[in-house]
Picture 1 (tube, rainbow, N blue to C red):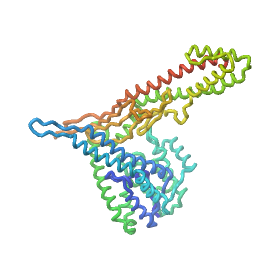
Picture 2 (cartoon, helix red, strand yellow):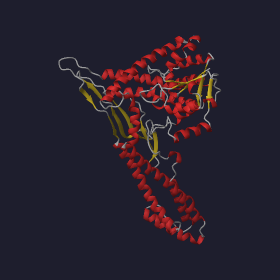
Picture 3 (cartoon, one colour):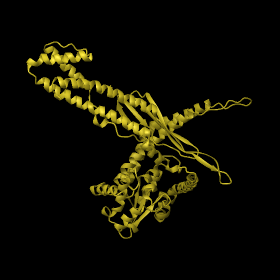
Picture 4 (tube, one colour):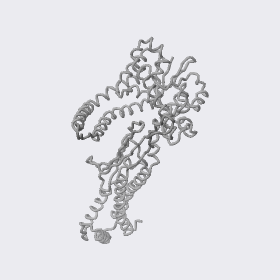
Length: 508
């Protein structure tokens, strides 16, 4: 029997083809191959979980990319001729935007139907009779933790979240715990993620030596095949099965596209070698580079400090609420009727000092006024749900909800990491703050310049520019810093009231 363990990226590549089209055709062909009963799919739970998440993201990209194209069209400009006809871009821009608007409308109206159809085909694969679903269990969880502790691949890289990858690897290493493997059975591990699973970037077709060592210790390394492209799996490893199942034509398009991708990959590798000779980063490294730069940026550090200040204010609200709801209310409720006068006197002085519009009479009516004021304080200090506390950091694609001191909702957006690295080009990743009315309150961006190098015939540098990642986010930081400062001023005023009452009622 031949078993195939597909990484999430391979499943996604089967849906989002290299012509930038989301389609389920290849999945349908793969279902027919499973119907042939000579191949079984091994499906770790994490792959199933991640597939649906990433498919949702890919569908969202369709609309996002249309909107991005529309924004870029705004920046196009023409030229005014003096003796010859000029180029007026206005009509072209208008026509293009109208076409894209129509495309966006069609997508938005049909998005849920596209999603349902796509998910249903994926479900047909994952629930196929020849699909073996492997649930996460305590054994796998403990194995992943042990792998992390000892920094074994894919945890061998610093500052990288690798739990999902490690779950897949531990499933592969311990495959005999879940499937009865015969001596002549083969397990194909197919992934495009060579950065985490391969030995080196230069030796992409070999598993990392630590993974090989673990497979050898289990006695199954000879039955494991490491494949980096789905097309290579079909063309080289499953060629006879595909022919016998009469599916060669159905997979031909995928093989042709894979060959084209391999050609482009070789070109990119050559370009990257030229870039690296001049001290520039490989174009394929820029996503990781941006993740690292964001983590270490002054923007991230400033944001973390602001989040910490606001979260501290959220927490102080809870302390004040406990004081009013329990300490103060119990103290007043348990007071002897003879003490009402002194209680009302305390609040009269408080209202006089704070300018509160409460007039406390020395009777039961005055006490009711005081209790109403306490209820109002609890309303003013209403707690922020713990689930809404701010995180320690922001990542690409995040939308973080926060509140100002008047409990108005504010949203901080950092766009997804949609970049198209190429020599001499640049990209911009937007950051912005919106209020609950969807109005922008502050804007910023991360600019990426990829740089390039050109050599003359003698091998000398003829032209070029440096790469650069620049965070232009001061307006965002200033705006959020203002929110944090307003919170701190609000907390300071409320703290004076609480301290006064604690001292007056001996509750400190």
